[in-house]
Every structure is written in C-alpha cells, then in structure tokens.
Length: 345
Image 1 (cartoon, rainbow, N blue to C red):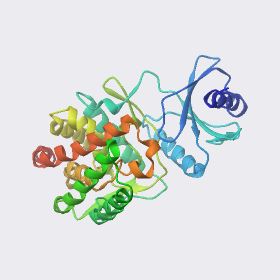
Image 2: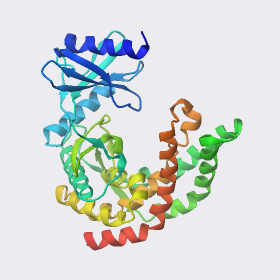
Image 3: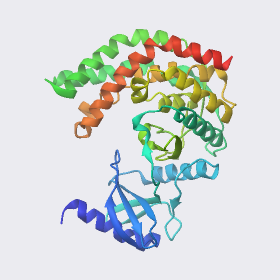
C-alpha cells in the first residue's frame, strides 16, 4: 500500500470516529501549499473537505485561523462551515494525522484565472463586508501605523542582501534559481525608485484584523459571484487596503486584463459601499501599496534557496508573472490613481 493510499484510509477512519460522518468515498483533493487535502462523500450524498496538517504544524494557530473564518461566517461572509468533532473541537488528531473538516464548496473555481466582468465588483463588495465584519473581532479594533510598516523598503534591502549572499555561496547555473538570482539583483538596484514611490503613500495607514492570506487560490468563484473565502490565517493586524490590493491586483489579473485600472475602480467602488469607514486616501493608495509591497517582497525568489522542493512549474510561472506585474503596476500607476481620484473625490 502506498503512502497516499494509507493516508486516505486514516482520513476515512477519522471521519466516523470523530465527526460522525460515514464516508462512502474518500479521494485526494486539490493540492494545498502545506497540507494534504481530501474530498469525502457521506452516506447521505453530502461532500466534505478534509485538510490534513503535516507533522510539526502549529495546530493552535490553525484552530485560531478556523475560528476567524467562522467569525466572518457569522457576519454573513461566504465561508464554508467548519464541522466540529463530537467533542466540539475544530481539529481532530489520530493515527499520526491532524485533520479539520469543512463543508465542500460545490461548482466553484479559484480566482487564479483572474478577475474580469462583474467579478471585480463582486470581489470588492465581499472584501469590503469582510473587513467591516472583522473590525469587531476580539483581537482588537483598527488602529494606525506608519506606512513604512506596510511597505518596508529597509527590510526589503536586508532580505535581498541575504538572498544574494546565499546565491553567491552556490551560484545557480540555469533554470528558476538563476532567474531568481538575477531578478533579486535587479530588485535591489530598483529599491531607491521603490522608496520614492512609497513616499507617495499616506503617512500612516489603518491596520486591523484581516483574512491574512487572501490570495487567488483562497478566493472561490462561481460564475461572476464569490462562492467562498477559504484558508484564513490566525488573527493579525494588517492593512485592509493592502489586502484589497493583493486580491484585486493579483499578477495574473494585472497581466491578463489590459483595462485593469477600470476594473480596480469598480472593485473599490463596491468595497467602499460595503465598508465606508476606510479613508478615501487609503483606497486611493491601493495600487501604490500593491506595487510597493510586491517590490519589497522576496517571495517566491527566496524559495529557490530556502525551499527548493517547493519550486514547481506553477510557482516558477507565478514568480515570473509577479515580477512582470510589478513593472506593469509601476508603469501605469499614475493612470490608475487618476481613475481612482475621480471616483473617490
């Protein structure tokens, strides 16, 4: 029996023992970044999504993340319901495996194909409602922090210097590692321009409890509407304007949609209607925040040295798209801000 088959059997045993779910079938599901995922069908025809956490996972943090999603769900946000164990726990552990179970989201696809059409407004509205709901989270109310904490150019220089020093020890000859090294060097050279761009941000920015990992794989769409938000991270205060920009200005969207400044305006208009408390100057800063944050990040360039086994063809393509999107955002930043200025003032 292979390891994968053995894991399926463990999951199939956990479901009736801890969740009173009698599975008629358990199959491997969509791959997770760090988890193994399974889809189970029960005797009533219902389907469940089971997430198995690797050994060494901080399960307390994962419980907090699941609880945050359920807090958002209580506020009317489309988040799959977590199935609690018979003891009322969010995660069950048995047979060397820890598992959480949520309702399966039917007939949905991730947002990795990009935003277009009515999806811009649908995503903006959902994220606006999410952020408004999370202002009431027990982790604490929104507060202000210096903008440099969101776009940390000094920290970026340190991270790039470290990465280039690691590459220098074992210079890559070809492939993604070689591209990553060259790109890191170009990013380091571009940091003065990034610092100048970041100076255009408001002096301080709002931070609050947010989703924490609102990337395209964690946004599920059904047609032109949002089907679900999944894979929250533990409660932490970050910029809601940054999180909005992260999802609506995903590199794949920016590169595939020539009219992205117009789409961005549609998303922000819908966001503002759902969450009118975020100051207009922060909404105006969304494209600058998105460009600045990506330019200051070393992901996924760092994976070439920190986690080579995680470098897949999909990650390589994403890394190249992300780098190209920084240039596109910077080149059309004035255009995007002019469109938003007309909307917000």
